[in-house]
Length: 437
Image (cartoon, rainbow, N blue to C red):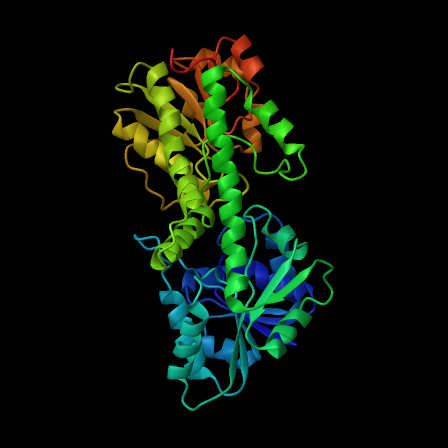
């Protein structure tokens, strides 16, 4: 069976390679000429462990073809996956312009039956819009079925998540179309949930909202730990042993970012507002996450007695390790807030600046190695827990910093060791003492 995938970002490229691994012939459509050229040469336009070798493998085999011609992709198969972006608009709603564009192109090029599978994360009700857009663009009435197959990928482990999913969710109003898509995954052993379109979409939004809420919750408890000198890691461990709660997503820190949680939380809140539903818990999770940056910066400002004429070294710009993605990265918000309060910033990331030479951070001194960022600095502020940061020679750091202050935005550094060396160390909820003395 042949499959077409339209949109070659994280989700689209990973999805295309998954289907190649499952034995299908795939045509992947990408309209960005620069990105397309890289993919055709076997080069990823983003960083994602393990995908580069798989890309080369299937290009050489001929089981994967990249094209900028969407008509070629539409003609290639009866199953067409839409994996284009749906970024947030200022009001929190989803920008469906890319979805609309692709839908109209599918309709205009359609010459026989198609099953159009929406893998992009879209708000409930979008399926009806896609059906309408396709229908209006058709040269003559042709049958089309709409199916929803949401993605549950984690950047940094997208390939593993695709090949070893916890579950596969398929939504459609046509049982035959749902069964056709279900059969694509016949060799996978995970549970497959077949339901209607709106339910399938809401499963995705609910999953991300719950995980984000869990992180925000433990971050609030971390503040309580700071106030009373309790240990958030022991609290999380004790709570996580309850099988009803579990240990995952209970690490306190600077908060969540990335391309999924912020966008999906905002979209879910917007969907609720559009229907007169005030999603208080989800809104609170969003607010706690927004406030978490200020919580850390307040600590920083207090320890340095103001940020004027102070230099803060930011370690990690991507929103999580093993990715070059900086969308909604806490680091960018920290940088902006430090600068707003009068401080200057030096920044280091082992990947972002090399992968994105076009990235401009006004007023930020970009360090090309770890040592350059901390020299003469008043604070070593870890934002992203890249593995190489665990191998730092802290004795050297102590000698070369102006002020021996460490803020650990991920609670991953050895607090006892740093304090024994003479650093003032602060994470969140790691027995840092009373805040309101």
